[in-house]
Length: 146
Image (tube, rainbow, N blue to C red; front, side, top):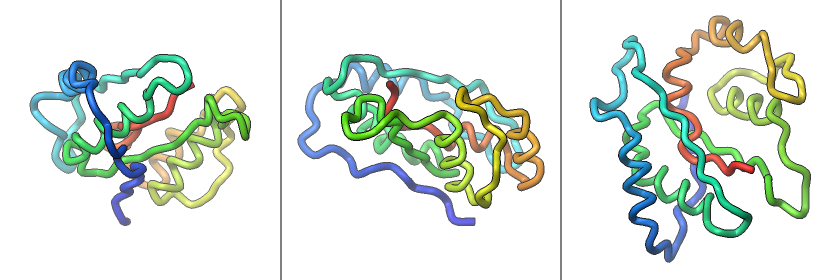
């Protein structure tokens, strides 16, 4: 299966934000990613908050490109369209489906409701021999939050 590399292009002319980038760097595990078949360490989930247009996505994408080598299983990206005036925000189930398809899981009915709740996700991990730790480590380095 090909390794997903879905980050959008890095932002041209990105300046400043060194303190914020250093803060994100601090959240990475010092020991690096686990090897094949090894359990992953603690997962740190972070959010970049702010009003529309202040550069949250640009910051996340810049950082994701800087640390992409720390995620050898791949990088996933989805724009949840939280501030998109042209379309409605993406539903959690749609984003989850997008991630599974990027990881090579065929289009299936995940049984995900509009709040992203699913009893079948762990079944999909087992059925497609996916390592949940690798998926978590590979995913969401850059995520446009709303």
